[in-house]
Length: 442
Image 1 (cartoon, rainbow, N blue to C red):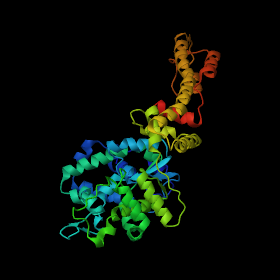
Image 2 (image 1 turned 135 degrees about the vertical axis):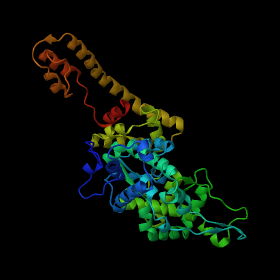
Image 3 (image 1 turned 90 degrees about the vertical axis):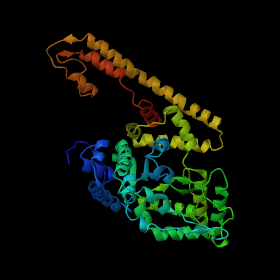
Image 4 (image 1 turned 30 degrees about the vertical axis):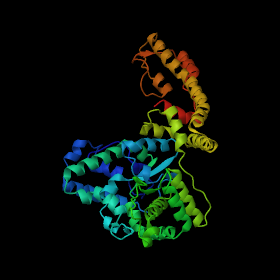
């Protein structure tokens, strides 16, 4: 392993906390890996890496992630590494202080798929056909155990996952994003998950809501990458099996809540139907209705204004959180807008966001103009500097750049320099302005 001066997430984790897959990968490769590094790997290398990753992943089961984290459900958390889902993750990074997502490498290497619960097979109305589905069927084909003999496919799968993790390295190292594999939790809590699923199967309220949602344009998730898409035989379902038709939705909800609980985070659904199922579950258990959903429509409009390409860099997402107080104010600002805009149609929502944030953007631009004036003035001042034999050390100390603003042996007049700093220094922004400024100057 080569030495590296780069910070790792282990530096920010409390002593004794398990390290993340990112650190395992950094230690294994010794640096940020390249595609050719994976092309040089063979089965024995993959086996060694799998052992290291799974050891770290297993140590994280039931270990809470940093406080203030949210779990957006598998639709985003399980697919964030794909470019098609990156925009959704970027929207959430505009709002939630910390996010829990699935660890794609640990899930790829998971080797105990035979311990994942099997769901009940559904028979057609005349018993001529039996349909089997569930986590095993949906995911087994994309695990290392299943692909191990196809080295080239394994290399490509791993490269896609590792590249995505290193793209998010600044966020992972600062605990803005936490990685967890769902499979150890599902196996460890399978009895509780199945008990919850059976409770929902026997709940008339849960069944009614699931049937209503699945008949709408907003069907429920049955797995991380599958919304709706359930197949019903033309002759219907055997009457004994009918109440089991929604077992997939109920299993998905139970495993989602189990993962959130194991990490000590709050589950925030992405769709209205998923929120409704969660609320119905809470009500059926006699709990207060505290569920909320991701304010995606609002965040989309905010992103349109601040990051039109929806490409929020990891560095920008970190910069947004430099001040916890400022980010908290930003979140409260967005939360208020989300409440006030619940009944808005798309045009009204767009106008509301523009009315709220365009004036703030203008204030930021006006305040930062002085910084540009200063840069220009410094160039002019340097051009008319006084030649002396004194090293130019005052300027970098004053401006905190660590680099001379003029060539060695050339210094600017101290009084003029101090006046320029006082008159044109970059403004001190706070609260919502500070967060927005960090986004728009990316």
